[in-house]
Image 1 (cartoon, helix red, strand yellow):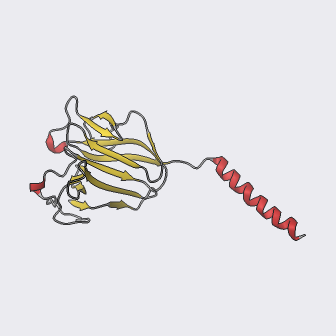
Image 2 (cartoon, rainbow, N blue to C red):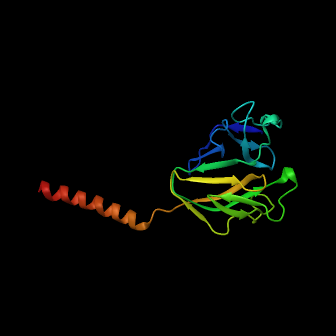
Image 3 (spheres, helix red, strand yellow):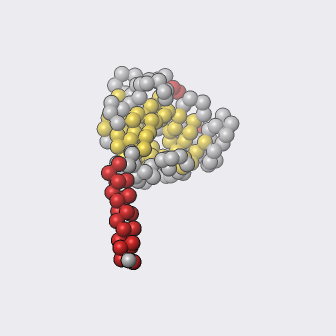
Length: 183
């Protein structure tokens, strides 16, 4: 359903938090906004209610405050609680007739060509993956066309085997040191 959050926290293996922002610091609070059906995640300047509104098909984004997708002067911030690799990001503009030639979306300061489609269609934005450390911000912002974030492919950064081996060896040395000093 149509839903708005000051910070949308998704309790997953990655501990994801999402927030909506205005690029102008003087602007009022922005909300992460989930549009119903196949639209996706956008930004809402003023919401009539906060939290999940399961099954609600009515817009809770104040219509006088603008649209509920990411528009001029807005961006979404994604923060994970562990190191991750962003393999792809899908965006759509289904409420406004789709993307056209030259439409761009800015991700962490780099402009990407917007491609029509929905999550899972194999036509996301990224040409190569992005690595993020725990707590780093993934900033997805308006460039020249409004959009929704429709999906994201994320995987955890594996802990290197050497770290596990070193940790196991360290525990073994501690145990060995205790055993020899007691003798």
